[in-house]
Length: 337
Image 1 (tube, helix red, strand yellow):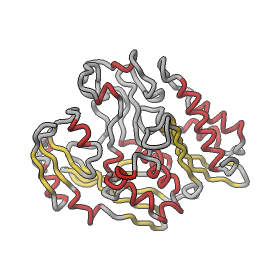
Image 2: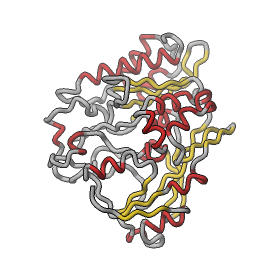
Image 3: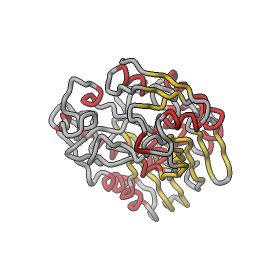
Image 4: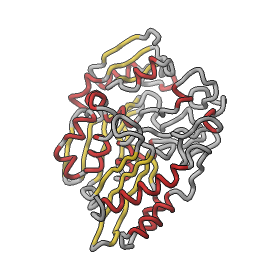
C-alpha cells in the first residue's frame, strides 16, 4: 500500500470539498476516494490496484445517511447503514425478505458489520486478472490492454452481458435484490442532488474501465425501494462452491405477485453469471399471466439465458443459472423448500 492523505468529513459539504472544486467539476481530483466501511477500498489499495493520493472518511455523516425508514410508499435505506444492520432489521426481513436474505448471505459476519450499503453497491469485480497487477491484459485496470480471461482460466466469469472487452462477473448480492424490486439510488455531487434508477447505475461491458454512471465526485446517500404486492413474496437464492464466505456461481432474486397460482407480475434479477446486476425481463415476460408450474419456470429460465455467451470453462453456468432460477421461482411460489 502506498502512502496517502486521510481526511475525515463532518458534513456533506466538507466531503464534496475534499474532492476538489465544487463549482468546477473538471477540477475534481481523480486520485481521491471516499471511505465508508473500507472493506473493498483498503483491500484494493493493499493490492495496489487502486492508489489514491487522498481518502475522505465519510463515516461522520452517519447521522444523516445511516437510517432505515419504512413507510406506506416503500423502504428507504441510508447509504451508511451497515449490511448487518439492514439484514437483521425486523421490518426488512418481514416486508422485503429478498433484501435481507441477499445481505445475510454475503461475505462474513465481520465484513457485514463493517460494510456500508452504499459501498456494497459499488464493489469491484473479483476477477483475478483485475486484482493481480502482474497480469497485463485487463481492460478494467489498463484500458486497451485486452482481456486475459477470454482465453485463460475463466470458470468464475460471466456469461450474460459480456463483450470482447471484458467477461468479469459482478460479485455482489444486494444489488440483485434491489434491481428486481425496481429501486433507485439517491446521490449528491458537485452539481447537486439527483435520483438514479439502480439498474441504470451500472454500465455495460463495452468500456470496462467505466463501471457506473456516477458523476465525478458523486456520493451515494440513500436507496429507495418502492412498495409493491410482490415485496413480501420474495427470496434470494445463492449457489456457491461453499456456503461460508464465498461468491455466487449463480444466484437469483425473485419477487412474485401471485393470484390463485397465476403470475400477475414477476420480478427477477440474476447474479454470479453476469457482468452487471442482471434484470431478466425476458423471463418475466414468459411468466406473466401464466400459472407458475415447473414447465413454465423452466421456459422462463431458458429465456433468461437465451443471449448467454459462455467460454470454455464457465459454460456450466448456463445450466446452473437456469436451475437456480427455477428453484427460486418454485420456492417463492411455495412449491419447494
